[in-house]
Length: 266
Ligand code: MLY
Image 1 (cartoon, rainbow, N blue to C red):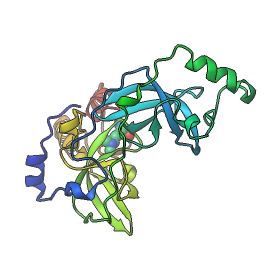
Image 2: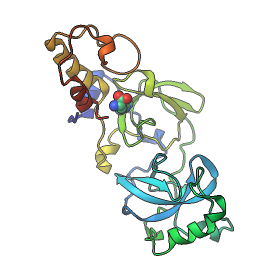
Image 3: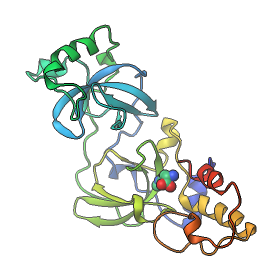
Image 4: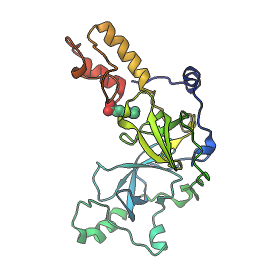
C-alpha cells in the first residue's frame, strides 16, 4: 500500500500540533548522505556496544545507512544516521588506541579473526572521511515534548520504516512513541534525544518514504472488507489494524492475503 500522505491535511483533520524541531536531537537540515552501497566503515556493534567493528553499507535511504557487520549474518542489519557518532572512517579505532573486534555472533572461529579482518579490508572501498559528519547534533537541554504532539519515528520492529507518530506519554527523560493507526504492538519508550525520532516534514526533506498512518490503511480495508460483506469487526481485539481469518466471519475473498499484504507493505 502506497499512499500520498499529507501532514498538512492530517494535522488539520486531527487537530494536532507537530512537535517543534527544537525538541529533537536532529539537525535542522538533514545531513547529506554521500555514502554508497558497498562502502566499509567502523561501527559500534549494536548488540555489544563496547566493540568497534567493520561494517558494510548494504542500503541507504534519506540520511540513513543500512549497515551489516562484516563477519556477521544478514539477520542483524541496523540503521544509522550519517551524522551518528557511532560510525567512523576506517582507521579511527586504531588511531584512538583501540582494536577492531569481531561482531557478536562472528560466524568463524575467533582465532581466524585477524585473518578475516585482513581479507575483508583488502581491496575494500572504504568510505572516505570527508563524507562523515564531524559532529552529532547536540541533545536539547531537556525533554520538551508534550503528550499529543506529532512526529515521525522509526518503527523499531521494521526499522526501514519511518512513520507518523504521536507522543503518547512522558516519563522523565523518556517519550512514549505511539504509531498512528496501529495498536500498541509497535509503540516504544525512548529518550527524548533519541536519533530515531524526527520532526514532522523530515522525510519530505530527506526523500525518505514516510509510511501512511495505519488508520488510513484501516479505513480503506474497512471499506472493501465491508463491501465484500465478510467483516465482523475490524476494530476488535489488540494487535494491528485489520485482521486475518480469526476476526472475520463467512468466506474470505480468495486473494485476501495479497490484498492485506499490499496494503500493509510487509
Ligand atoms: N506488515 C507488518 C509491518 C507493520 C508495520 C507497522 N508500522 C508501520 C507501525 C505487520 O503488519 O506486522
